Image 1 (cartoon, helix red, strand yellow):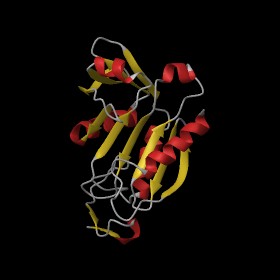
Image 2 (tube, rainbow, N blue to C red; image 1 turned 120 degrees about the vertical axis):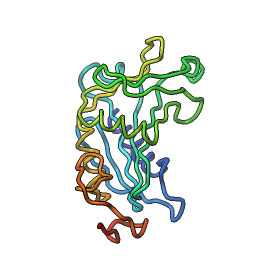
Image 3 (tube, one colour; image 1 turned 90 degrees about the vertical axis):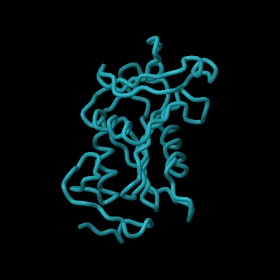
Image 4 (cartoon, helix red, strand yellow; image 1 turned 180 degrees about the horizontal axis):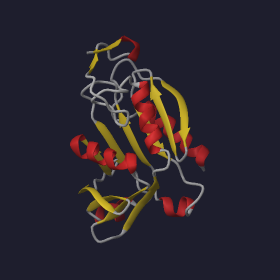
Length: 198
């Protein structure tokens, strides 16, 4: 099962919501950080996807993948998506979700009839990432309390730190984990070696 979702992660990395339009992104090596698989493409877009945990109930409790993506540009937003393992009609009928991390409400929004029924971007995603970095368990539930999915956050902080390293954000204001005061200034969207700081 974990092998299957490694393949899913590769596919998500190749077709991530933030992937550059031209040239076609080429997926790179996939790294495993406990319950998360992380991959970055040749444009510096990184995606990580939650794997089925081998403990704590495994697949039956898991409820479907959650992914986090970010492009390499200074203004690139974080995108959090979820594909709950539930029939579309039943999922959409729930109308809205609540995102809980360690039992604390972090975000709420509409459930859409799309490839990614749950999609969090911008300031809402940035707020969620701050909670994910220090959290243990992420849950999506409906407004009436119906469980949607439950994800172990073990390894997620290390995965996001890997984003920072690949995208040369370590020690910058735009880092997700390795935050600092340096201002990152992208020079070339294709690839990170031609990036400077000031």
